[in-house]
Length: 181
Image (cartoon, rainbow, N blue to C red):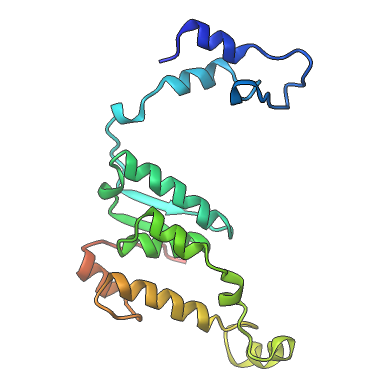
């Protein structure tokens, strides 16, 4: 809990600075509101969270940022209660990893790899564009990425890099849901 003196010190805005800048004194933002102070006083471990589902959105580097959210869930004891995982794009990669048992540090290590080298694997560069579009799923087949993800999934499951949803359900007793399109 913050005492009154601490609150005053946090709210004391240096008049020489704009409210949009941060003050380096005391390493705290100079524009903290009363609501922010009240939020700082809340201890998340005092609550029981009934969360069973987690969904991650896509967005490239957000996949790595989600590692911090999983770390917080681990620290609060919420992570073991999560039963269903979903995501799109980078979030789907994250959801797949945590669904098979990866923790925040392991997912961060996986997602911190040079993904561009894994995704952009057209054999002949720009000359692969037309043939790959006509015969495959796009310019870059993504085979390197699929191999790397398969190895990651295999290391936490039965050793099968081509794990199916049915096998995940059997191994981990979790459920997958989908929407009608």
